[in-house]
Image 1 (tube, rainbow, N blue to C red):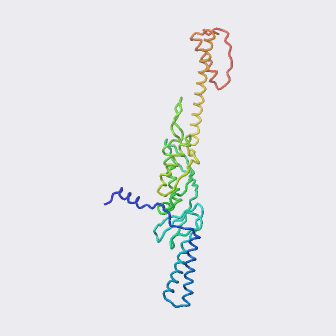
Image 2: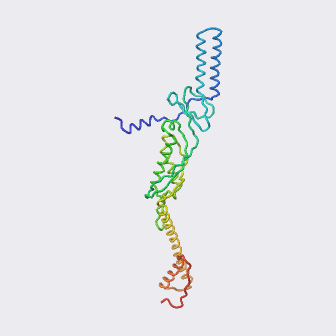
Image 3: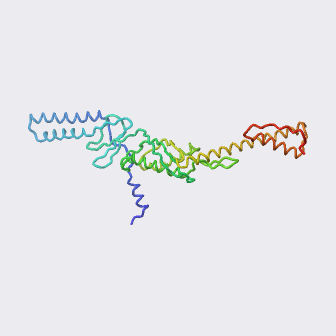
Length: 307
């Protein structure tokens, strides 16, 4: 009894990959067909003069070959290929554009090699932190192996769409929407919202892995829509505003402490005034209140002693 790995290996061996089909210029093929037909016609004319059975068979054979040979003509558009099958057997692919002549009595299925865009629908996914988000992407793809694209998948565009949606969901579940930043420092963590280039590259690689069995190359992948789900959007907006306020306050405090330190050092170095520890503490307190306050300060004159 075959194991699962043996079955998979057998399937890989039987996968058809693209190969070039026999082809020549269609104009040369036209000359060949006309030549066969002309020789057959001359033989038929000679048959009317001398009733020879051999010449009659030869004329019919040549004219029959000329008629069969006309089925080998195919017109290939630019950025298009034709997959050639001879009674269900894959014999190759014609990529050269123009009028071509290939094996007669074959089916010639056209497949586009042009760039194609796929815009996924907006998917609702839980990101790495468990928050529901809406995400969508645009994929630029093209067929590079016509045999795989024809024989390995049933509906090519539907297959690309489903594989893209699966890759987008997996990517969104792997990373958080925003970076986790601690007060006092920034995080190097990859996030969906801020690490645009890294996320797009990860998406391109993941979609490419899912479509390699279909002979498809992903040239570009980028996130086209990213937002919190409507039911938590308001709460997340408040959270972002709170984080922004905290970061701004931190900058204000850092700047105020630096200014106070600079003021004390200049007073000490220039000998303008001598302050004991209590007066230094009072000065630091007053300066921090003035510098960190949201409202303009109102001066208060002290006419007495602080003791």
